[in-house]
Length: 119
Image (cartoon, rainbow, N blue to C red):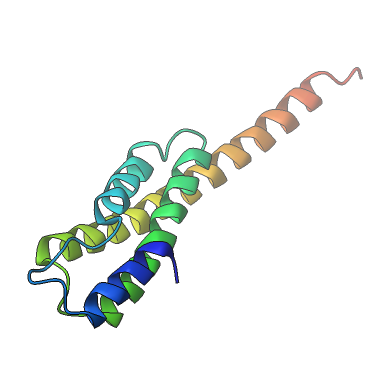
């Protein structure tokens, strides 16, 4: 459990929280998911890294949400879900872009190596 999880657990056990709070990192997950889609065409690597980070963080947030289901606002849970979906889309598009750029580099390499042969 992370530091945020421990503080949430302690406050839940002591009933110190009277109202619902935001799910930890829900906005960050959403921003990373959106950025992974926006940067997926940058050779695929940037979008892939951002998307995978959003997915890992959304899994941790989902575990926290499942541990304390009634403790978080609906808006923060929706942000986490939207960020996860954007992360999945970003990873998929980045993988396609990465495969495209690898195939493109291979084709160019074969073309230029065969064009430079002296017969």
